[in-house]
Length: 127
Picture 1 (cartoon, rainbow, N blue to C red):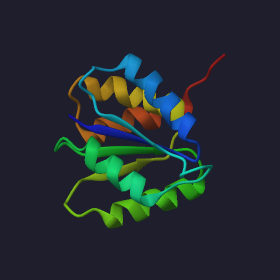
Picture 2: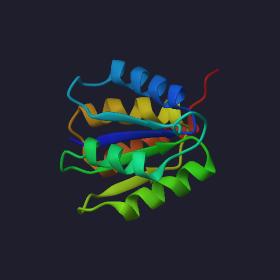
Picture 3: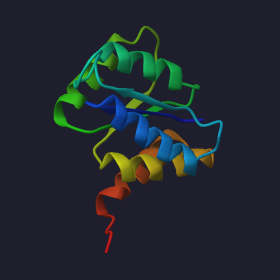
Picture 4: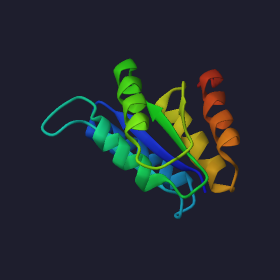
């Protein structure tokens, strides 16, 4: 099963997105929140690294991030991995992308399909 890591500058935001996506997903789907830094706003490459390793079930890990510097932290986290894990970062809205990715990953889809589902959220209209 593909794992998902939510990266946000806010711990509460990452947890909230994880909670929402988890409601739409299989209870077995690993969705990990990797948000905030100790005592404040920011991103922590080591927290993201741990999240990737926790989310990995052998099928790869999709990362969704809120802002540009979260992408840089995620890229650093990927470089820090101590074992080979296929990781991709989705350039998509975090909430919509996480829900779409979680639903698709719950069907047993592979990483490329889960990424595609997350990316389709870029074109979603709310009205």
